Image 1 (spheres, helix red, strand yellow):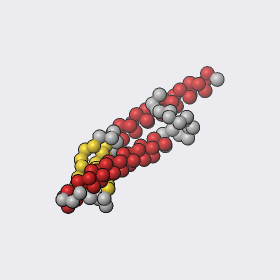
Image 2: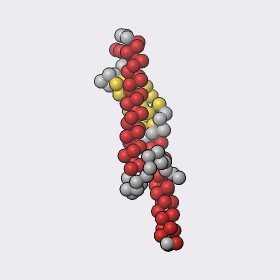
Image 3: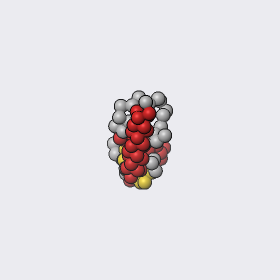
Length: 107
């Protein structure tokens, strides 16, 4: 029993190290969210920091409310891309463990 507990603790420590490494990699990740067929682009890091907003000059001449909506949609697209990338990278680290909903690593 004592050996298996020690082994479990070692596995948890290794998993925690892998998670921390993955989090650092995600912090360097950049994704681009788009809206309006690419007329608005938002570049965001894995830490949800917006780095750049690109707006096609053609839509600036038209409807300002549409531009606002497209910026919001592109930002939401970037957020969803970060979430999907995070989930994909982290799912492999748990090694098939069934963690309860909302359980976050590292411990």
